[in-house]
Every structure is written in C-alpha cells, then in structure tokens.
Length: 85
Image (cartoon, rainbow, N blue to C red):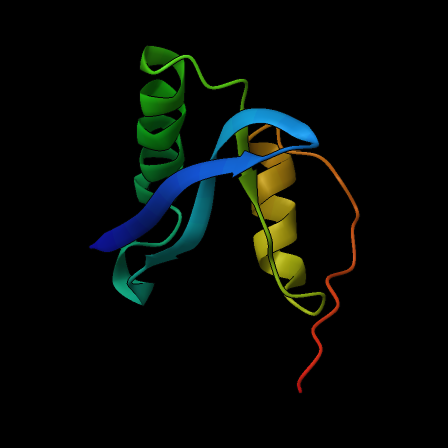
C-alpha cells in the first residue's frame, strides 16, 4: 500500500525533530487515506519521543505532493541546493 522512511533530525541550529526521508503510496491506494495515516504515524512517534515537529523535503516540481502536504497541515517553501565535489 505504501511506506514511510523517517529518522531523527538533530542539528545544532534547531530543536530535535523527526525527518521524513521518503514517503510513497501505490497508485491504486492514493486518495484513500494511506498517505495521511503514514504522516500521522510519524507525527505520533515525534510526540511520543519529545520531538518539536516533523520535517520533510520534497522536490520543487512535485506540486501534487506539495498540495497534499499543505492539506495535512505542513507549510514552508524552501529550495534545496545540492553540490557535488
């Protein structure tokens, strides 16, 4: 049906959070509450462990995913930069 990969997010400039590394739902299960349930599971884990919130990074072109995250109460508009050496 779907999966979520989340881990601890600890940096010196922000409070402890949980970080969603990946979340996906199979096409046949989209719009049936699976994605929302996966987000809620990470949010519950965050609350139980004293994290201040949940963060995630989503590609700039993924407008459908961004609409879903906003619908679920997530906010933010940050562009991610990657360098290669």
